[in-house]
Image (cartoon, rainbow, N blue to C red; front, side):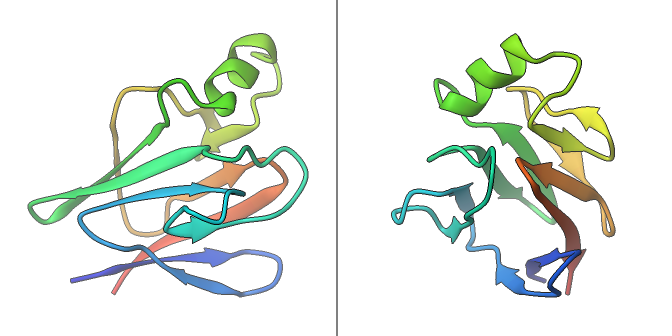
Length: 107
């Protein structure tokens, strides 16, 4: 079992490396995204057993932005602010990272 992130606007697909993957605009991330509001290291996705989890990357710029813009966070999971604690992902979840809307898909 593996996972993909699919851009809702462009249908571009990003394979999620296992067992853990950082997502953001920095070239060293497992998934590199560009776009308004995407931090250099924004989110991480981890696979534990058969389940996937997402969290804001501790100490990353994304964590600070969410703290300052609570009414309009730049990272949401199914329209709720994503937190620094791991949150279980399910097939079809939508992850908003800055201006990018991605659908989580288990293959």
